[in-house]
Length: 161
Image 1 (cartoon, rainbow, N blue to C red):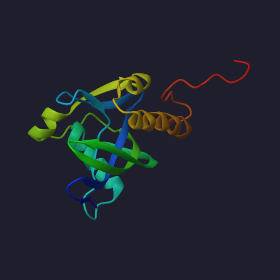
Image 2 (cartoon, helix red, strand yellow):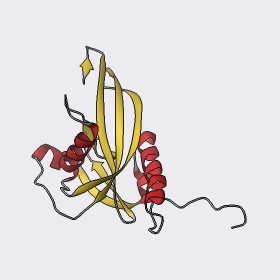
Image 3 (cartoon, rainbow, N blue to C red):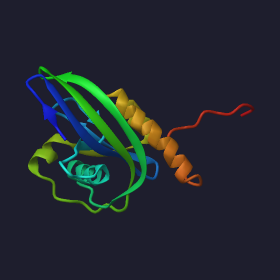
Image 4 (spheres, one colour):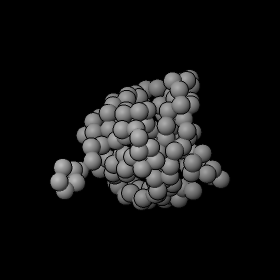
């Protein structure tokens, strides 16, 4: 649900950390000079997981996505264009099922350039700390969900290593 007045905007968003083996999907936003994770508004009556799948598909063009785990929610606040925003974000760890693509609308095509990078590079490239935190969390969850496959960021050595 979105609530706004002349100076305050509150809304819910959902998105994903999409993995494909040792790679993570990031979106370049050339008009803003940003590197972001895919996410967007949750529509009225829409479940967060459905919004996340829809938004990731719309922004990236990838159609075959599977939710692996719920990464949780957080609230972020920021000022932009003379307004104060309060956004509740819900992220999911997703897996790319195949390279099947959707035709994207011209707006999304111009605004979002998808790229696959290794996990550590994703953390280094992302513009905002909140999104770097989602990638770190996704790497931890991915290691637990799939312990036989190398997922995510390097782990810290334990004593004696």
